[in-house]
Image 1 (cartoon, rainbow, N blue to C red):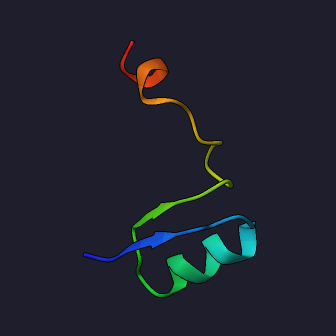
Image 2 (image 1 turned 90 degrees about the vertical axis):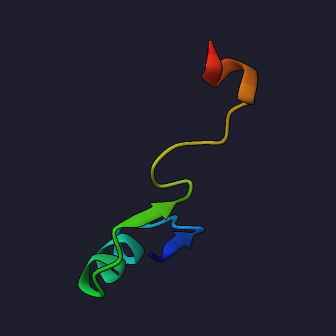
Amino acid sequence: MVLAEGVERENQHAALQGCGIELAQGWLYGKPEAVESVLR
């Protein structure tokens, strides 16, 4: 599986979908958070 990193804009997301890439992370999906706040 491929994980795309650094997705910041809708056009990047669309390009990944067009290539069949299903996993991605980046500012488009949410800003970084401290591990402690996510695990609460």
